[in-house]
Structure formats: structure tokens, C-alpha cells
Length: 411
Length: 212
Image: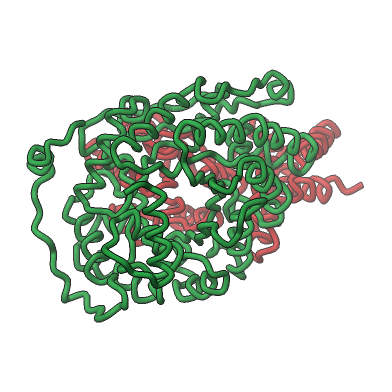
């Protein structure tokens, strides 16, 4: 079935026209728009896949074939409904601009914040926009997305770094704070350049190559407490809107999946409202836009899931909750299952809940990740029934190497 | 003009250009370096801490204030070198291996300096053996480990283990902090203390060293 048919099936199912069984992708679509057959669970294989396949970081983060194959294998082994080819997506445009990264043997590369590319106003004058798809690791990203399509048959969710977070990284946090306070005109010129000369052409290129329908910008540096909502409204949101207006189309959704920090403010709604504004539909159709409210465990554990659920329902958007990574790592299985049951009990409602395993820390026993996914499959079936953790049935497990051999999967 | 009040205010407001000017002028007119530091810069950063704790200041305000404080400190510190009672103790700080974040560590460093600790900052992505070498070479009273990601937090335990294996664990106190870190985790890995924020970290170090 083609991707359009899958989208249609998922959205119809969400609306009550429940024909046939859903596959993982269709379940995710149904979960975003309404009530699927059960709560969808997405996995970001990331560095766990890298370690599970014994790949050095240099290969995983530069070579499309091992990157996509390893990510696919890990996601399939754990049985997630859907997975994203996640790489260090904050760094791609920055590296293409010439920003130095720190590379390590066993973890993702990071921007070298000791040497920001735009250390002075003169550096900014010298900055040249990258050639989309040619500079830095942009070819790696495009080829990885093409491979993802080959492997899964559906276009990937593509990722970009938001202009605001890019400005912080390319300037350095303290420098950019000073810019915004003392020379806001310079800060706006930099943001304008990054938005229109870097992010927009890159998004256009990714969409041209992959025909992808959803592009997500991420905005870690627009989070509390690092930034205030006042700063975000003045320096971040206008450029999110600009990028979205420049890149949206009827067949394409570009969004900023936002930030975090609800627990850092007296009134969490302040941050939640900013998140919804980051999801602005710009010039797109609001009615079909796959809005979601992504809330991280650091925040929902303090503020409470029911409050997040109520806000998502008020805004008529899907609630997406990550599963706490250190819990998956540490276990034991009973504790992991108890946590999944709590997320479902407090978050599932009558639909529009997606659970995200955003990180399985390297070294996590495979049983733990299996238990997390299996618990969602057992307890997340709509209508939500008995949620007694002691009723959990752990599926039988095959060691990863044997499973790989039996499946005949390549790395 | 009351230079002490003005200097303190420029630090609190995060105006490092004015803070540097005022400190230079005060020293040039014969003000004792210790007075420039304590009545000006430290008074200013303490006011910042108060505003932060009362919820009137946000992290960006604190960061810029610390930058202003550091400007004055850079100027005054060499003039205080060797002065009796100039420091309460020596603290070595670093973000653990794999972690390139330094925001929290820098705030802690500034707050410790403002509380008259000598701070040696090893920077980011610091391996366990580098911490061991630092303890051997610099004989700090405390080492502070920062981790800002769940993935790198685990490397804190490696530092504690490496110190133990090198026979140095008894000679230095270990404190930890950072966004994903908890007091419970500190206890589990055998650290001596945990700082939930920079102000609390200073109090923890004071307590561990028995100073006020």
C-alpha cells in the first residue's frame, strides 16, 4: 500500500472508520489524529543501534548504509511501531556552514562551543550560506533518507535545526545573550540569515529529494531555564513562522517540535502556549496539520501528566510523552512496566497519545527495551482496560545476534 | 559617586563593560583589591543569587551577571595571590567525558569564586584519568563533576571508581551536579555531595570542608 493510502487509512481509522488492521505507521497516524487500535510507540534507535552493531561513531554518523541498516535492525528487533533515522540533526547545517565539531569514538558529535564560528561581527560578514545537499554531511543525510524510503517504503520525518538554536550554537550562548540585550539588530540579522539562507534552502532540498511530508525543526536552546519565554517570543517565534511560511505547502508540513521547561516556570501553561505557537500552521491548512504536544519526562514528572493531557485536549492535539531513558537503562522490568502503565493510565484518554522511546542508553540490557515496547502493546489497547502491572507477560526473547542471522539482515 | 554600589549594580545587571571600567578606576584610585572584590563584585553576584532564588532573575540574567563578575575577578585575582586567607579551599571542576556542555559548570565555577574558593576548571569532555591526574598534581580539596545528559551522567561513576583505584578517593571530596543528576544518584555512586544548583553547591562545599 502506498503512503497516501496509509495516511488515509490511519486518519479514517482515527475518525472511527475502522477497516482492517493497522500497521505501525498507520497506527502512528491514527494516534496523532484520534483513536487507534492501541497506543503507538515510536523508537529512536540512535546510539544504541550504533553500539549494538559495534559501529564506531565516525561510521554511524557519516555513512548512510550502516546508519540506516543498524537503525532499522534495532527498531525491528524491539518491535516499535515506527522509527526515525535519528542522527545529530542539530549539527548538520552548522557543520555545512563551517562550524567545528567534536568527534568521539562512541557517541554523537557535538558542536565545539569553545570555538563558535561567529565569534565576532566580522565572522558573520564572512559567513557564506552552504550549498544545500553538497556541503558538510548534507549528502549523508539525503542519502540516508533515500535509504530509509527503500527500506520502509514510506518517506521519513526529516529534521532541521531551528534558526534560533542554530544562532545560539554558532555564536555561543553568552555571546548571543549579549547580542539580544545590547545589539538586537545584529541578533535579528543573524537570525534572518540563518532562516532564509540556511534553513529554508535545506528544508526545500530535503523535501525535493525525499518527497517527505513532515519536516521537524528542533529548538533545544529555546527551552527554559536557558531562555525566558519573553526572549523566545521576541527572537525565536518570528523566525519559526518565517521558515514555516517559506516552506509549507498543502502536501508538506513544516513545524518546530518545540522545547521544554514546563517545570522551570511558576505557570507551566506559559511554556505550553509557546510550544503551541511553535507549531504554528503558518500558511498551511490548520485542520489537517499533525499537531502534537511533546512533553519530556523531566517536566511531566514534576507538573503531572493529567495537566498535560488536559492541555492537549483543550488544544485538540496529540500528546506525545517520552519514556524516561534512565529508567529503561536501570530497570528492573517491573519498574519499567509500572512506568508504562502510569503513562497509559494518565495519558491515553480516548486517543491522541503517542509514546516515544527517544533514547535507549548504550549498555541497556535488551530485555529492558523489549519490556517497554511489550508493555505498551499489552496495556495500551483501546478501549483501555485493566492496568495491573503484575499481569504483564514478558515475550520470549531471542539474542540479537541470532535474531539478525535468522532474519538475514545486513549491517 | 559610590563606586562600590555602582560596581555591585553593574555586576548584578550583567554589564561587564561597565563593571570592568569601574573596577579599573577603583584600583587606579588606590582601592584595596580585596575591597573591590568583596564590596563590589561579590556583593553584586550575591544580589544576583538572591534575585534568582526569589524568582525575579532568569538564567540569562544570571549568566550575564557572572560574565561581569568574572571580568572583575580576572583583574583582581592576580593582585590577591598569596594573600593570607585569600581562599577557602581549592576546587577542580569539569564536565565529564562525552559531555560538551559547560553552562551549569561555569555558573558553579563563578559562584564558588565569588565565595572565595580557588577554582580550576578542566573544561568539557574530561576523562576519568584527567581528573585523577588533577587530584595528584593540584591537590584540590574538592572535585566537582558536571553532566548534562542522561548518556554522559554514567561517566561520573567512572571518575569515582578511577579515584578509588588510584588510591586517591580518601584525599578529596567528590561533588556532582547537572540537569539529569539527582541526590539519590550521588549516593549510589559514592559521591560526597550533590548540588541541585550553583548556590546550593557552594553550601555543599562549605559543609564538606567545614567552612562558612
